[in-house]
Length: 315
Image 1 (cartoon, rainbow, N blue to C red):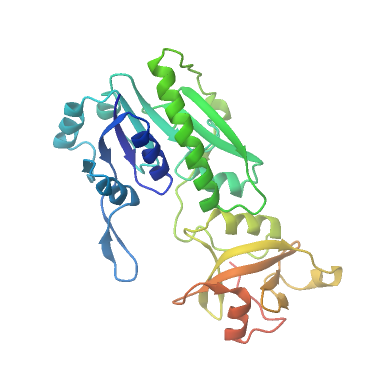
Image 2 (tube, helix red, strand yellow; image 1 turned 120 degrees about the horizontal axis):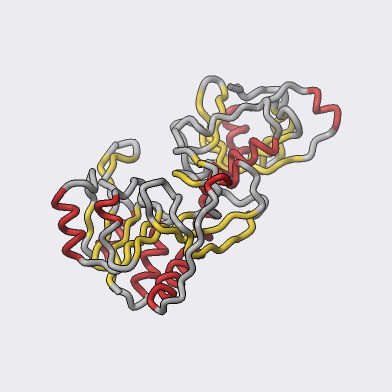
């Protein structure tokens, strides 16, 4: 079968790898354009483009899919399937109508839950016990197409978005291959989504992770996990941004509950900083100060000469 693959993120790469090793022919890879990254703001390709070029695959990275030459290239490729996995843009009907058999959307949630741009983060933020991957038809409405298959998995207590994305990508790789084979053998099922049960995961912004210490430790812990590696949960100390990269919920003595939210109530030797929240305490494990490299929370405490009673700024 001839496949055109759409993808841009780390989630996309294992799925593309699986398709390449499956015996099907990936005739074209479409990704988003190179973007400026890092302190030097140099143009950098997506991880998908880098991987695909390393495999000598044909790659397009257009600003707009509606460009006539792009549509013509896709049409001439005459794909049997399109596989869309974390591409980052809506695919117009003029393109998703082109495959001979089906366009397949590999979406990392149990649709209709968490449609939209950040389903993995949304599942963690909302405290979902489980999530999964859905293979859906591609339609004009975002992530609303009929379901061809789903697979679910439990979310681990301290699992962050990067770790969960990696697991879901592997699950999605197997599920999309299974779905393609079911199409080929005429055994695929089609289930309509119940849109009355849908939820939407909005696009993340740079400041989405700003911590409000007046929230319970449980919610801030979810925030730290959900926003790793980007945009990162963060707070401010002496006016400078501090990214919180890893944290756990901590147990504190009852008399410490009287401390104002954001107060540092414990500095654990060679390990962590404990911070009072509206309910419970958060144990900071790994942090990254503004303009510095990642370090342990204890290293940060030493460098800043932090003492118990100091406070992080809240929203």
